[in-house]
Image (cartoon, rainbow, N blue to C red; front, side, top):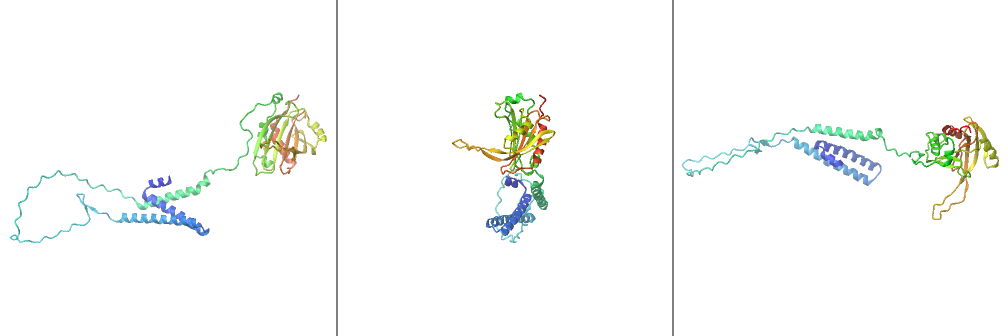
Length: 354
């Protein structure tokens, strides 16, 4: 394509461009070959310089041909290189001259052929003007190549944060229809997976690897208790948010912790609602997707820090869990959980009075 475009250019535009480009490329390749010894680079550089020398020779010959005057043209259309030399004739005595034969009758003159008139001289192009214009075009192209990456939007290969919804809407379980104003898993995910989440976790340089929301029901309730949840995973931390729409209050939940394995229990209020901080281990489940299709035993996973907040200020039942954990077992400060609660809780409607 580039060669076709170059052939369309006039001679006095094309040749200076080829000379300038070949010189730049040749000198650059030779410089690189001298700095980092490389025979292949040196060979290509020499090839470009030889190509440039041939183009320079062609331009020089063209300039000399333009300066050399052309042959003169006679009025009849014949080309005359030099003035005709008149040869003197020797004087012969009349007595010695042989009698000239009688002249033969002249043939009838043929119709005069119409000779083409002299072609009108073409307007001579200004070679220096074309050469200057060629270098100007080359300069504009070089400036465009140099300034293009600075002003044109570059290809952005930066990974994009994970999105919550995949566009498929599934029918909600019946428990959600029986619950007044329940939040869905996608709504929890959208409330959690917002700009600034990585910064709130103390890892501002990370982006979400995965984000999902599900509309589940609480186990051992025969599908009668809605349990939407959302999970957002980063390289360092994983955040899980769930809302349980049962009749268990936070106060009752704290009392049940005495019989559980929770540690570092701390009661507090968040946005005017009763809340409690606790720590507990997650469960680690391995699933074998091979031919056997069997999985390993359920093991104890890394420690998670959880903030449990009532769904209403009067603590009439139902609560929201916000958990953070990492594969390494490291946990953020409790202030991170409080910040996450301030982001998520306003998106969960409070339960109406029963």
